[in-house]
Amino acid sequence: MLSAMERGVRGIKREYLDRIDSALGTGGALADLWDRTLDSGLPAWCRRVVDVEQAASEIRTYHPLLVPGLLQTEEYARHVLLVSRPKDTAAEIDVLVREHMRRQAVLDRERPPRLLVVLEEGVLRRPTGGRELMRRQLGRLLEACDHPGTAIQVVPYESEHHPGLSNAFTLFTVPGKETVLHVETRRPGAPTSDPETVDDHVELFGDLRGAALPLRTSRRLVAEALGGSP
Image (cartoon, rainbow, N blue to C red; front, side, top):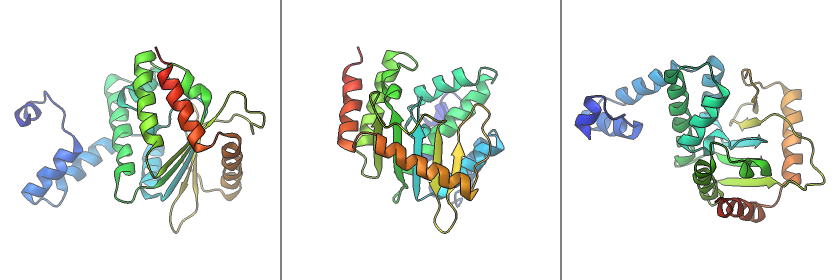
């Protein structure tokens, strides 16, 4: 495997760099260089989101159309990026996919942030990327339902008290700092800490959780969607 990495035939994972750094006593220099190389290909707003995400103690996120990035499989993330960024080169898409996967490591830390997710039922039912790809993504989502630090709720189609569809958005609670909001649009902007805007979305997220099914019922709905995939 090592020779394949040296020849560029096989990609290297960050966990291997951590081990190499440890073996060589480089103080994390190789892993740091790898991180900065990835960061150099990201838009400024995306780097800002990553920084806030890494510092957050709690992440609250609402998604009406797609599985949130922190819970996406690699193939799901690649499909979404290819469809949503048709003008990007293959190399640019590769950078963004790698960043998606790297960001998920925040949930594997010894003290991960608490993750609160609200999804619309359509996220589960729509066969994004094809039925087999979506089956694997639903399996990943079902695993996340059982993660002790993750709470996933689904707003059902028949919800009578829906507070209204909006763009996907995420609220980051950073210890000792203001809550940070990032709203996902076709032309994403930088995260904001504007008190009025943040407060509006905090209230909206609470309303969305109130309209969503309880945790156990939401998990059953995810399992049902997975079992219903042919």
